[in-house]
Image 1 (cartoon, helix red, strand yellow):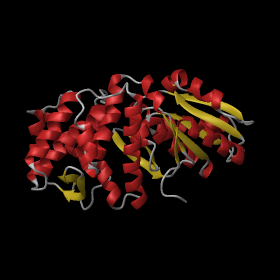
Image 2: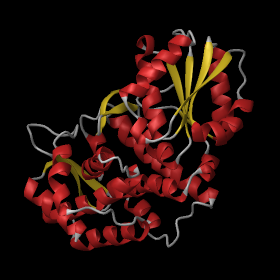
Image 3: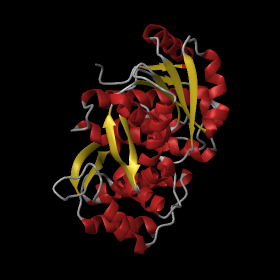
Image 4: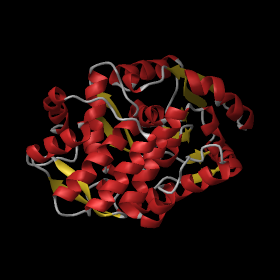
Length: 352
């Protein structure tokens, strides 16, 4: 089995889905959607599907707050009620929450049925649907339960981005920024030159999507199960996920990209204090991110709870909090232990 998803763009993606359906001949096709993709995306996809199989639609509520085992249980029960057998095919049509959870649900149902991802958000296109990570949150702990499993294919249709709010577009753009910072200085130079992010320029956005996917594909193909180099894709996420979890617990959730943007600023500062990154590069990163991502309101008294979430991060070992840090723009290192005092200093630097 390939260590990366087969990924297809635009019309070729639909052609590949139809080819797979014809060859596999699923007993039923189940579209997993949320209320947004049901309204805005499904009507564009269904007419393109060529299948003799019966098609069912299951809708879940959007949002990170619904990415949990209770929703999975409801989905497994729905699949059972629909009498979906092991020859069924799930097509996940949505953002990162839906593709993460849909892949997990598909792989666990009757010990595994096949699934396809059609990401509809920028975040899912450049990150969540690529590379085989699936799973759900456990309480407020992000992605605490999950597995590595690849879809049959991923279909990228950049025009779906037009259905998103500006905030959702920015959330995905944070992962594009991350790809430049960890792996490609020229890409960072291009992205950081924007005075206005070209969300309405489909040719430009499509090029960014393609470049980010190629960066992620290269990293994942070297380390599918995240035992080594794949960890660099978590830059900004040790802090970012902890802050996301904190606000999720408070029932005032922030978007994933907002947490990652904060995380990249804070972790760049830690990189400087560890003697890795030049301060001028940190200031460039901070300045660029601060233009597009409003400062998240943190308070000093939150730090203890945020640190508690960090201690549950999946990258940790031997009771040490492990970070991905930057040696320079375009080069990241992983498994760096960072002491609590420096984490607190870096968060206070952000707050103040």
